[in-house]
Image (cartoon, rainbow, N blue to C red; front, side, top):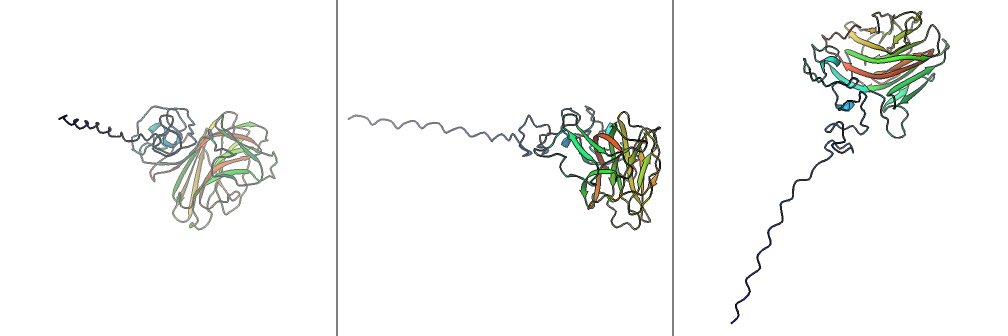
Length: 293
């Protein structure tokens, strides 16, 4: 009698599948490790300062730095915090170094007036506005609406700008800061003019329901100038603004109404051509005192 063949040895069980590797945790279409913000969606990969972190996750997106000092723990490094003693919030930054396909301006930015032309250079990370050199022309405004209720008390806007050509003694450039103050009685904003040196002026434009003349323009934007604007709602329906450039100085005046649904930020140019290098907007702590120079 022939013995029956032994049963076949069972094949070893297949190995347990390793969990799939998620190469795009933020689902922005850019795979790690090529994503400069691996856990924050930023499909444009904008990186104004050229460091290792993209603008969307950089604690100082306009300045390449490796510092991690953050005394007030507000996720802004001390050297880029408007006031490192108190917690502030960076709520918007644009470095103009990336645009989506088919775009001519950054997402959400629109012209507020028909005068002037605006263009973006992604190679240089700049926004340039040109305005006819005629005082009868409405200043050229461009901006982005941050939405109703985005700011109701204190807004701080900073940018760097310079004039590149053209104009006369009334040429101006400035940043726009516009609080959402629909519930405030009386003027809803003010025009701020910064006194620099002879020839031109840096101007901060704020939405206003009243009117007024701008006065003579003085100042210089031959080289890049850091522009700082703070707008603050006070009790009694008063909105105050302060604008600072190379030297301190400000004046409250009415100006053209900036059409928007809520808080807005942007740029202004009159009687010449100005180039802006970035813009950052902050919600300020009630105690914060932004730099004065």
